[in-house]
Length: 81
Image 1: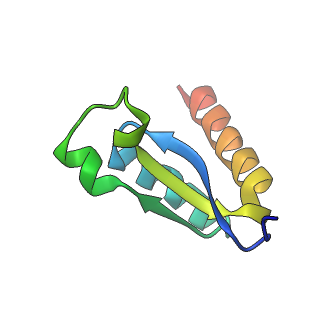
Image 2 (image 1 turned 60 degrees about the vertical axis):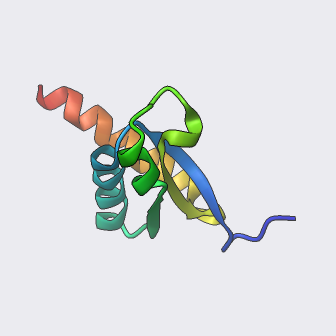
Image 3 (image 1 turned 90 degrees about the horizontal axis):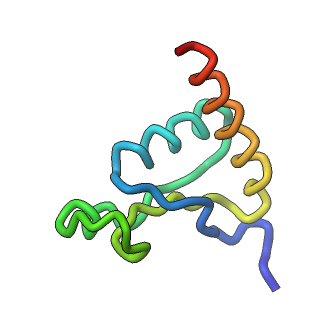
């Protein structure tokens, strides 16, 4: 059984820059997260393989909130363009 404080994979990104942008958006909104696999992804840039993508981890209890925040940020970004 998963605990609300367990860290889980929220999403995968093709590069570290994209993952850190998402991490920054979450951090600004009070959601703690961390980036994983950035070294492997930069050494072996094969973004089509999930094992070579950069992961963004959040607390299990924050998954829904984190998804809402990132979806809202993406929507706002599209409206600005």
